[in-house]
Length: 436
Image 1 (spheres, helix red, strand yellow):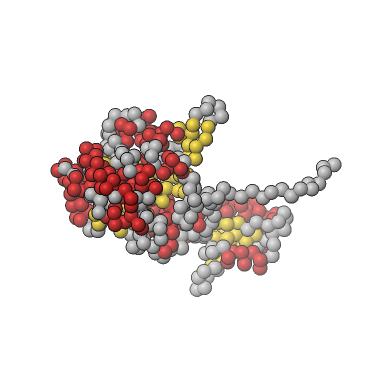
Image 2: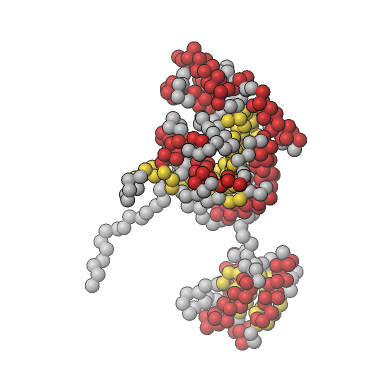
């Protein structure tokens, strides 16, 4: 005889900052993903799926050792089999470029790719900033022209319009090329050295390793100093300026408003030329909705031949939060019919009928009883109404005997109830779909 459990079993919960997505919220995620997939298809971008786990050196080389992500936020662990250091991906671009190199994707020309999936960063969870979060991103690999930078921006802009986002504005800057950034970097260091007493500890740590990141500081006591810092745009040569002008000309021709933000930078050395962000004031401190830029040096940094590249990424949580602020429509999947079944012995016939309906494209929820007890007709109709279904399909004793089903409208009071032969339900379903 089994001994009773004397000690209460601890209830397990999710890891802090790694959240379950439950209905109806999951319907909003699916809605956004469907919008993105349709949009990507119109722009001829194709889906790529890279592993969630990559070798740690990929991100150290891809993001740089002196970055917050590498220094503080990566989930790293040792592979028990061979001792390799592995990391849950904190972002997807490095993995996409690694895949392009490993599989020689650019052998026959540039590739337009997009991804949807989870990323992981070990940081303090807060609204719009979690330890596991979904990102959607687009990467154009092998294209050097400003027209592809513009294409990506136009695509993101089209997404905001399609899902009804309000108060999203575009900020642009150019990082120029490596030699121009080096001249700016020297001027930046000299500027901050002259005012070293005003730098906080984080800025002092980054002064010689990554001074561009000081421009990202939110420290209110440093804002006047940062504002007075040398502007990168003043160090750009003719080719970099021409690239930036070509981009802005296309945006203007398409009616896309933007502002040039000279403080918009990237801390990683592989970024060059165009950088951009779509930002909002509706989400508090987490105001960046989508960020992107050109990274022509990343292929070489990861051991491949030089190849131009540009892309962007957006956070699903932030976009959906903003969509709700902007008035997200009801995106819950619509249910066509709810099957009311009074006798469990009729279930084989009922289920074959429902399968025919589903094969014809109709969404049907079957009432599930308890063993042989299906529940009263009244209780089933309450469930049918609560389900949001447009019709109740009544499989009562009379209907089963006559091999028929009664179709009762639940949302349109003026519509008439009808009785159908079971053999005709597929035709009824086809009519239902054509009217939708």
